[in-house]
Length: 296
Image (cartoon, rainbow, N blue to C red; front, side, top):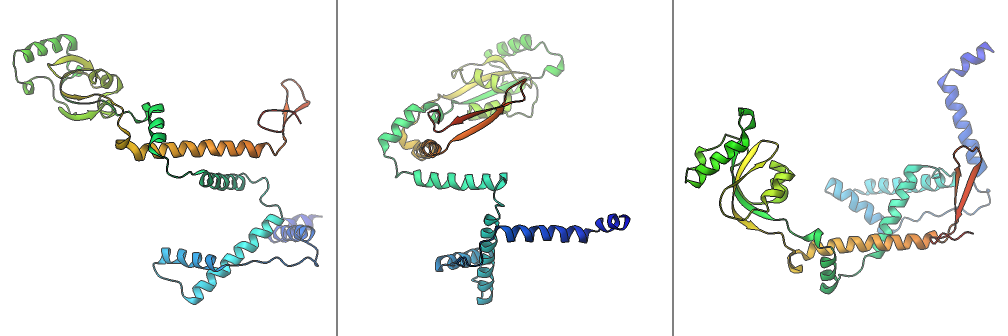
């Protein structure tokens, strides 16, 4: 017994046992010896595809020997694939299941793609999803910065500077130095928000061109702002954004058609979900046969 335990620790013994188990599993699952041999056909188009993949990788066509190797590897993949299916190695594998689902979804999306939608269809989609395509407000403005770290009374100091600005004092002589740009030219609201924060951006885009105003507060401190030009948010004409509208429209149609196809496929199955109720050791089974929830 002691010798057996020592022998069992040897990796070679583990390898032989696992090999014997796989051989036994293969023998139990393979078809009877009289079964007709399966055919593996490597079509001319598949050979061309293998050759094209080689050319894209190596920037030259394969030699005869290399092409033979590519075909041999393709056949090896097919043999192993079929044998793996015969052994059921594809079952209960979450990665295989996810990959197969993705491939089927891609196929369903390709089948659901319609021809180029016409302008009336896209115009209706544009109106129904206006928020998706509406342009951002844009402004050109100048700002004067007041640094809170200098012990300022920001509100009082801002009002004093506003008085001097209205009196014609040069803005360059006022405020505190900062790394943030002094001028912004037709900046979109989102771009202003990245520099000063969302609250600041929402306030300044409501200003109209004219005199200095403020203070407006950001994470940096206080700012006085002079808006010089403004372009309000607007819904563009279809001609301006047709490519974007068509892309979003087709993406939504693909999602809708894929969901419709899934519901039709689901009707072919009886779905049983086994659950355990809280506080109970007994399981409860719920069955659904189709998308409308009718019982079998």
